[in-house]
Every structure is written in C-alpha cells, then in structure tokens.
Image (cartoon, rainbow, N blue to C red; front, side, top):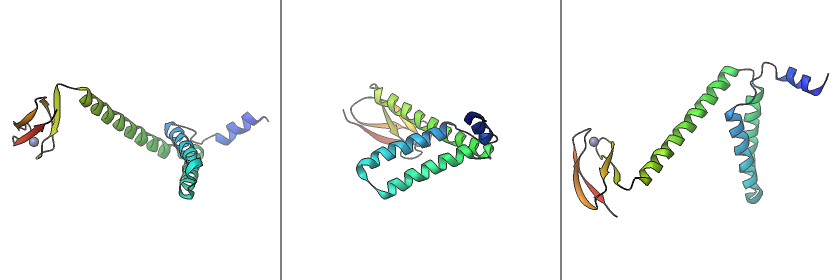
Length: 134
Ligand SMILES: [Zn+2]
C-alpha cells in the first residue's frame, strides 16, 4: 500500500479543504509571521487555535456543518467586498456628496455644492441641514 492510497482511505468520509480552511491557514501564517517580531504568547495561542480549528474542519465527518460554516464565511467576505466597493465609488464620485439622514438614516446622494444647504429626505420627508466643505 502506498502513501497516497492510505491517505485517500484516511480522508474517506471526511470534509477536506475549502475557502474557509485556506483563509484560516493563511491568517494563522500571517499572525505567526507577525509574532516573530512581537513574541507574544497570546498571539501564539491564537495561531495554534486557528490551526487546530482548520485541521478539525479538514478531518471533520460532519460535512453539512462545515459547508454551513463555509457558506457563512463566504457571505461575510462578499458583504465586506461590497461595502468596500460602495465606499470606493463614493470616494471617486466628485460630483456628489453622500449624507445620512439624521432621522431615518437613509443615505442621500446630493449635488456637490460648497456651503450649508437645507434638504428634504425623500424617504421620511424630514428637512435637515447639510454642510458641504471643499
Ligand atoms: Zn430620512
């Protein structure tokens, strides 16, 4: 019996790797690298915990739960990417300013005119002052 075959037998019915596993290993590697300089015991324990959790997921015999964790992780990543995209778009939009309505918290896209203006929120109808500098 060669090693490859024995590994296949050992991994049979186990979950294996996914995006979350890779992320955990990469995150552990980064923390481990940072800890070369910091030499913190707590950070080292966090690295061990991440690696143990990643290994536990790889060897897990409950694929449904692992898939659920991975789906949750991917949703969070997608959400963060989307927020970043929104932030970048607003930063690059020089013709408008984005202000939050103090009442209903809706984000309004207003023309970029310097000074203090009064605006009406289209969602809740409340009037409020907007200050635009530079
Ligand atoms: Zn409003």
